[in-house]
View 1 (spheres, rainbow, N blue to C red):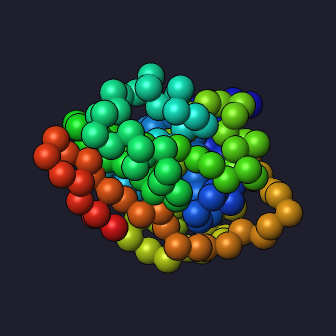
View 2 (cartoon, rainbow, N blue to C red):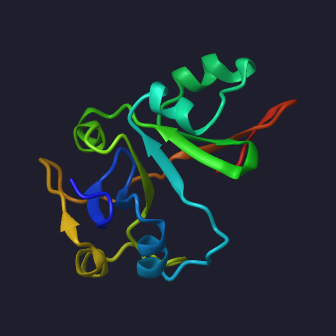
Amino acid sequence: MNPAVIYLAQTDTTVGFLSQNRDALLHVKKRDIKKEFIISVDSFKTLKKFTRVPQKYKKFIRRAKKTTIVYPKNLAIRVVKDKEHLKFLKKLKWIYSTSSNPSGQEFKREFAKEKADVIIYNQLDFDEKKPSMIVKCAKISKRRLR
């Protein structure tokens, strides 16, 4: 697996562009450089390499499904638990994840296939599902953003 290329794959939530190359994703999506990407990780061990998990939220984070947690410094990370998506993710450990549509627009299969360097197929066809829930965990409380 090449971490520099852009993969098109069915993720645990939606059809997404995946890469460890942030600049390539920014270019493909024509996205504002200030807007951060979600980082998908394969395990809690990998999560610990990115940020410290506040003791107060460890149980919530461990049990969360299809949920992205926003940590201090606006670092948005989702621990993937979906078996199909994990088969791919285990090879790279972590990856930037974004929907496979032009910024602010709907999913277009042709656009997605044209912009991806590698297309990952599995038993499921590409299916635009509900995006992950986003929860910000602050020092005092947690708040649902999406």
